[in-house]
Length: 314
Image: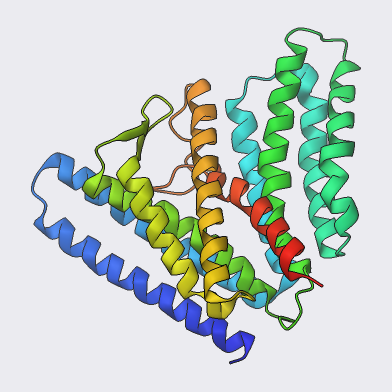
């Protein structure tokens, strides 16, 4: 089976799942009677509608090729960084550093992926960005809460630009026997992470009783995590045919991806709570902001990328 055939089979499967979910949501909307029930089903249907839109955007980007995919993720990083810094208290003296992040770090990081310069891609932000940004802020002569302000900006840049950029960076990996199929690997990683989030939500709503971290993330439960992690791991193992992995390897990679995605969601929920916010934004109806959808991805993508690069590239 060619890479294109695999892609269309995969997209067909996703569309079928979304169609079933849409019909189920519509039927549940007809049956529910209480205001609370209508609110829950309304949120569910908004999420499903958003998934249709997000799937369509990703499909178009992947069909247009590598450049379009990289541009899409550059936009995602830009939007996520904007949400992060909007919620994070800053001062006028931070504007130089923030401008550099938006208009230099984002385009350069993704340009390095486009030209497949792995060496500089991997160190550009952690080394050059890390040293240059606080230097610009220091030159403004504003020392009030300097460490706290610099740390917040650095954290936002690492999570929203550096970590998320590892998703399209999968396109530059040279995997023996897998030439021309890297976009499928990218889709695989995203699907595992997002299916884990969805299944944790579903299992948590149905079976959830024991809170994992009630202060940081009240909606996360032990039952939801176990059900979601097990389901997403099995789905990941079942999708081995679009990866360079064996079924067992795909299951192992999926489990690690799920675990890191869960930790990403937990950590960024703690960040939101510390800032007094429920969501990162309102960009995606039913889901919150861009960062609300990418929090799990930001932790999972770098680990998935480097494990694949270390164990499966030539």
